[in-house]
Length: 280
Length: 328
Image (cartoon, rainbow over all chains, first blue to last red; front, side, top):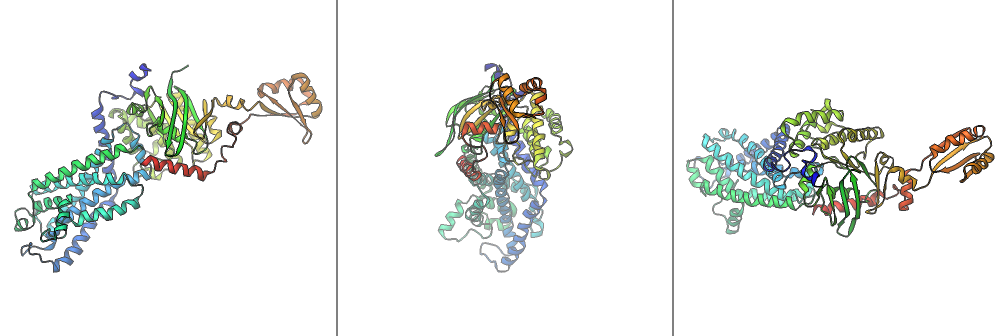
């Protein structure tokens, strides 16, 4: 038996010496699949772009007529206020959608192909999270093309800052989605979670109203919501040095990013632990 | 005797109150086509899943290619390919994309991916469809692609869990040609499960499994011998005379059946017996048929029930429960 064990089984190279490169390559394969599918599904791209457009057009215009906040200086529109929130919303929904694709993978059997491969569960999660984060960030960056339409003008540094914030929050939200989706047997179950978790995350993030002058219980909830810090970071970058920034941005960019990174670390660990504990 | 490539001792699996596998012991030699034959819910898939490191055994142990399935799962996984009972392809990718994904997950070196891709696709005759989305494939094509994928990383053992389930007869025969050819060319060990009796005849050895236990394990030929001899039916112008003559010359029970005037003889090796009878009594033998006992007869004798009488709904329920448990 020793003879068998010493020989590279089945002629597969890299059995023992090159583990880490193999794990990275496996994660890359999973990431690549997410991207391949995203690019090949034009309807998904169109849908993900159309939804924020509808929000901007309808809610932006509708609320814009009546929206007067003491916090917002004169000369700024509700559209400009809402734009960073819509960016955050796009990232949130795209990341969640990426995560729930593992429910489809299970339904169609493809998850078995992934889980039976000689790949560490951590690498599978890493590939999945990187894939979801990339796709969500791409969606968000596409939306940046609309910025001039709502009267927002961005420099290269701002775009980079926005992309970084989106990438990090998308990674943490994909991780959160994986934790939930890997415990869900059906899409119906995930719908319930969407309603009770994703919608509150979204609504409490300050995407649609300023987080000032709220009752204490709601302030506490908004502070717990990790998406709040992402929206705040996006807002800081979008408004730059304008008076709107001074009026609406709560935390410095670095603090926001720090909190998101912390959230990412917790969620990624949870996602890996969840995947490890599953037997099949 | 080749060293055992799969070695299983007292392997058992329990899902809550259900004992799916109740302690099975067997060994599979390298290069063998080994079959698990039994009704739905007999424990076939559960055993495969334990060998493939997808389920942790409740008791006992098993090794594949010398690696313990609990202690060395990564090595076991690298040494095996598996085709699941239900499809496990990404329908929204092309055949080629599915295979490339697999190659990267199994650490096939980049420079070898393309030649191996071409090789396995040619083997299952899908080369011209490699850029088509898997969603456009028929059931048989998907199964062939999965077999190709399972071989892409050159495993030493290929698991086929009900490889021909839901396929038409022609496609089933086609799949079997691949499997038998595979063993011949690549020397890969094939471990398969089936509840189609006629398919298990392709195996070198068969374990008959029922209620989570192996009730018999031998070559198809030897298993059939357990039932008794072959049944030889002779048409004769004078059946009474022929029956007496056979009894006098060869001994054993030759019976002249009055109803249709045929002589029925049970003999161990029917094919060898026939020419001797024909040579001894040329004027008394008009036509001869030899029927070998089927594995249906064997299964019935060993388990007391026919393989297909199992209620499908009960078996499905058990499987659903097993899945629900596996997910926890």
